[in-house]
Image: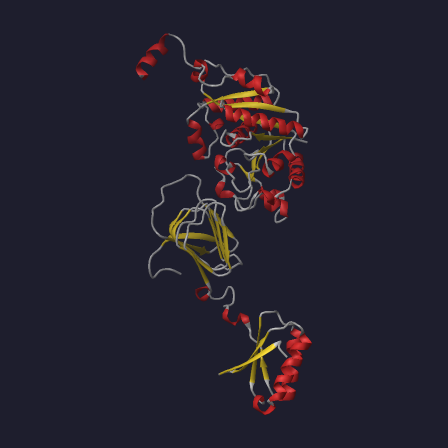
Length: 264
Length: 204
């Protein structure tokens, strides 16, 4: 029996789908059998993040409606043999699925996979209800902005009201320099406000845009800082103790002074 | 009276049925015919109605009319205008869309589809006949959806996520190579979908 984890945030554009794709890929790279489920019916994107958009024939709504079998809708990743995607329909809307149906579907997936990672849509309406229905744990993604933090707080309240107490926080798109100068919310502020366990911090990385456009999650790139952060998160999910990334990521030492000089 | 209206034209008598009650319709038709038995004798009759008239009524009417007045009741076969599916797509009914089909939109038509605009990524165009796009195809296009292997897809630019003809599926290659921006035609050759540059005179 596997574990189902929902990735949610309330606010849009904070990196739920990127997080889902990367954690899913990272867990699969660590040898787990993983399925990532797109619950954002009508605005699906997870397929693009994994570069699998041209393979979709059947989807989650087809499975729920009984048009096809669950196995027919699962798409194997092109890089990893133990990573699968369950895409959703683009031409339907969120009301095509009910929370009960979603719960049953996730239960079925849990029998087959070690980890079922569900990408939640933005908002707190029907789509959220669906995504959360079958989840054992939740990962709340936020960015260092007051609006994202407030929405995350709302979501945590919603999750607790549903009895989902096992939730952890990922702070995405941290700019270390700005937090150091105090121009951005820092990590302690956010954990103070939200009062949940911190699962990881992901630095702001321009390369994420490139990897998304190419359909290659950042964790597949050994040089990517964000990718490294997601790998650490995946290891923490498996119960390992991994220290958080150094806040001060600027190189120090004699040569870095020269490097800085030349960079200007 | 009142459930039927008689009109005459070159082909015979056209009866417009306004009511729904079978017995009433029959009674009214007979009453009207009795008023001019000789006039109507031996003519042809057509029935027209907004409602779906039962087979039972139509057949009993036909028999009785022939017996009583030697009137030949001719059924309107609505499907005579629709070409038979899967036979000649060149003469199938065509729907024209003058807009871009965007992500999340799905259009289906029982016949050919012509799109004056693009088919964007995430959109789905499904036709039982051929699909012609005067623009760029970036989404999913499915021609011959009811199993017609002769259907084709033509577009100014073919860069689809997937192409489906009947039950054959083909997807775009993973490495995004620079495709030439020329009109192309997709059709089934053997067991697979093949895409060829569009050359006048060579199409199908």
